[in-house]
Image (tube, rainbow, N blue to C red; front, side, top):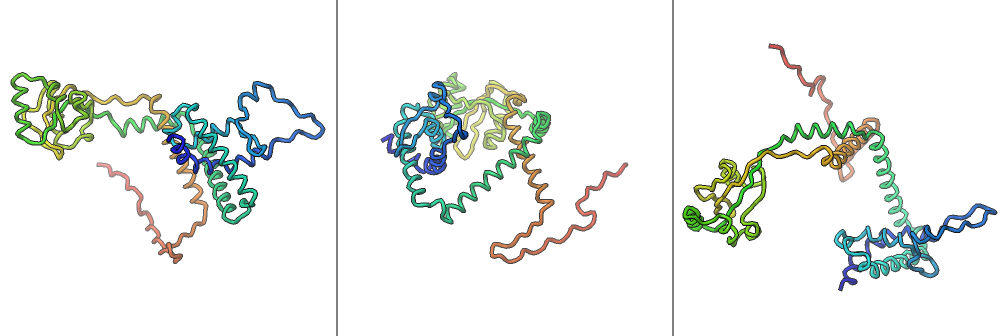
Length: 314
């Protein structure tokens, strides 16, 4: 069953990535004229051993590992010894199909040439953007982005609360009577049958901000003090809640080190956007409607329009 699943999940991805493999295998590096072929050290050969031969052409381990990266992330998490037999079969199949395509000279067809050209253009775009980003990316820019993010996202108040959810107001009022009579909130929360996920943690919802909860629930929870149980049932679209607030605190923002990877990506997007904007400013661009007819010209902005008026002194 697993082999069939892997075949179905992996064949398309493997075929997509395998088209370049035969060309690589068929065009090994040639020694210089008059020079004897150098023999690779044993350790180097072992690092990338031959794992199959297809009509005399070698398939090496790195091709199988590359194919693994093209599979569903869930399959990638499986042990290699489990995946390997079916994965190797797919690499072999891909090699056979690719070789058959070259035998029929399909690489020379207009369709394949167009797709190769599109792929080449995409790779060139990615390379140019990476070059532009690498040229301007600095730790100082990432640090500046972090400071901006802190200003735009001040720490919010958080509440940690438990709840019991029931279907009717009468059930909720009955629970309040039990709590007033000495019943433990945690025990009643563990026995609830609607929010079974919260029941597993005795009703504990963890810490949350006001915008993470529906308004009636958040309004009630944030108005209470730690240790307090709601005096009246709280109604939401999910039913009726009895709430117990356990704690309140301010959010702790991530450190620069924690946020740096995500911030670096944000800075990269900024740099890429600026680079593309710069290209557009120096290019002659004509756009048309989807039917090919001219788009109406935009009216030029009036002189001074859009300029921000300086604040008047009082």
